[in-house]
Amino acid sequence: MLKMKNTNFLTANSSIKDAIRLIESCAERLAIVFEEDGTVLGTLTDGDVRRAILNGIDISENVIKAMNKSPITANILDSKSKYDELLVKNNIRSILLLDSKGKFKKTYSQSESGQNLLDGFINAKNTFSFAVIMAGGEGTRLLPITSNLPKPMVDINGTPLLERQIENLKKIGVKKIYISVNYLSEVIKDYFGDGSRWDVQINYLNENKKLGTAGGLSLIKNINESSNFLVINGDILTESNLLSLYNFHIKRKSMITIGAVNHHVNIPYGVIRQENGRMIELVEKPIESYLCNAGIYALNSSLLGEIPKETFWNMTDLIDHCLMKSEVISVFPVYEYWSDIGTPSDLEEARKKY
Image (cartoon, rainbow, N blue to C red; front, side, top):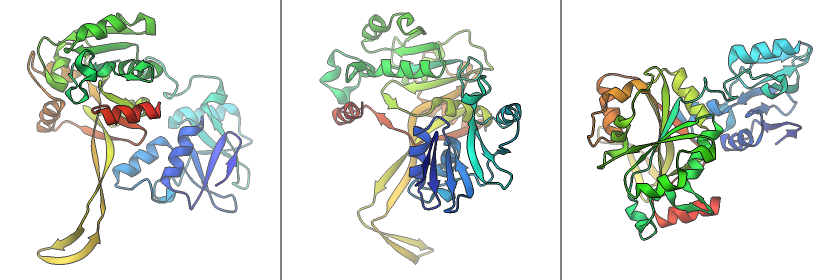
């Protein structure tokens, strides 16, 4: 694997997992795949990886299966304004600069332009209008820890889980946050107040009775119906790129976008593949993969008026409602660190991570 200043490089023998590590470690959020002679084969971004997962490609597979074979390039002798124009036109972070023979010389990234050109650089127009954290659950599986403490307030090495979520929202430019509360709500309210200590605005959705994972959204008032917002369960700890989720949601013109984690199931037996009673193959102890609900959602705010008031409604009910209306519902793969802090062992693993 090649490595040069400012950018990390891959060979044609690298895996998608190798690409993920490099994308997450470099400022350009870009991995470049080279032939042994230095010829550029292609590039991978966060979006390329997620598209590959949606197409059923495992991250252990070869990087060539996921890469963009026609990346945006420019001549090394072109002007800086030409580079900036390409970044804006294609809505990308980086371009490859080549010499007259088509050989790679360097990357040019948005950070070098000295201007805020792209939606990867946060402002109020290209992130969620607001976020909702569903924090009303009792956390019975975490007893006795949650006897006197709401589950979202469990300590992750000195910082409550809920505070980590708020800090992550602030990083992507979300300053307006609703917290849906029920169980031991005063603990959350006393700790966060109006959010000014974190330079955010916090409002509380007071569930006088349990309203499920979507019912609390009916308590939100006076919202622009053309906006889009984030909903995250209060027991989720993740490093997922939430700005990428926003862009994915907007680009697909979705009513709902569901964050999904890849869950692997080890089958302890030989699995028979058959058609009409005739065996096709016998696979010994396969590992099956499924995209599972990650408890993270991007929603169009027009849905708020369709959630029944003061009624127990889960997010699955809202999704079914949209499916019946043939609304666009998209799936956004989460390949970064993700954990549902539901049990003492989950909590212990999270504390090891942080």
